[in-house]
Image (cartoon, rainbow, N blue to C red; front, side):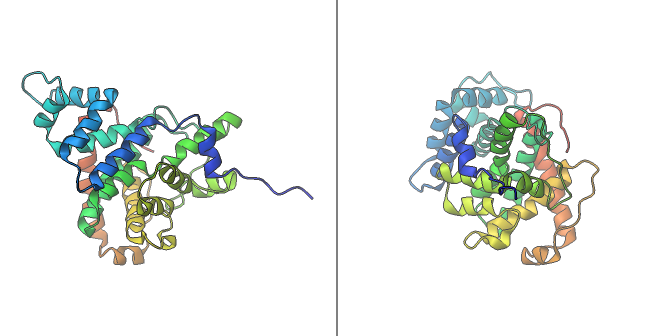
Length: 288
């Protein structure tokens, strides 16, 4: 009789990494500032200023052809030119993108696809949160970070089985079955573990953990349900010509939406994503 398979834990995968990307710590600090009633707009600007590569990218964006005027050479000038909300969105997005510097070979994803998934999910989460009167800042951050668990899984597996590849299933499963078979947990669980390690708010951690099965979320069901809906929108936008089954009717009813509403939201999110993508100068779009 063969011994039972021993799976690693998400905590083990985190320990195996030399260090979590520094941009994740910056995002956690940004969320603290956004939640602190005593913080000011200047606090987030100062956080961006301290992250030199991030500050350089924001200043470069302010000097792009889309924004006319005298050359901009400081974060303060960039905020004046772009507006605080644009800088906040761009900074959070750029921090998230730095988490995915290379391809996820286990999943067959080049960086551009992972970036687009992250940004599409963020735009979808913010739009849904606005409609449902949830916290839009938390929703946007959850969207950006929803798949960071893939980085841990890819890093751990590629060190041991560099030729391994997972096979994606139809929505809503996507990668979950293959990940569970390989590791005993999925990337949603790994994402939640990273966020918990970095002391993100507990309700964000729980929503991330149950983003594919919101019924399991006791204290963050509404946000977890929005994540499942946003994953459908992301798949519609980023999946190319692949057909995607509609979300469960009860999920739509709970969100007070009709199919027509969902299609309209998807169209708006597509426009927001394209604007953000071009603003960040991320190059050619990829689908998967």
